[in-house]
Length: 155
Image 1 (cartoon, one colour):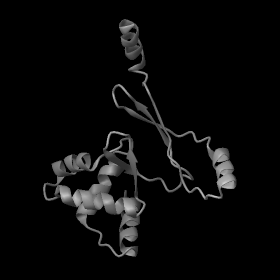
Image 2 (cartoon, helix red, strand yellow):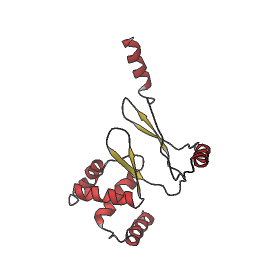
Image 3 (tube, one colour):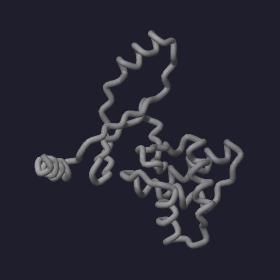
């Protein structure tokens, strides 16, 4: 965590921002919940349990700042809620998501087979692609059988 502390501190300083305890607390929530896709409200709920001096507006501003600085990646799953997760700068591309239409579970997919498609698009359209985001909608392992059963009952 010391390395992350130094990285966040340097990034903020290099971009003309102060490194504050509130900003560090917000960052730690994402660091400690890497497997989750958190909304600003969820971050506030978590951080306010440990530090009741942090307000919701501070969380919103910090999340927005971290997104602008490339620390966080914003994801929307067509429900109108912006969710965020730490951006892995070592990845050439971002991972993709499987979204369950029944329970709303989000499963990450690390497999990326779109490199050839990107090359074709860049050549064909003279467009430089820097990233992409792919979402698959369906039913997770826990829901697929119960949803199938509901469909059969309706027929």
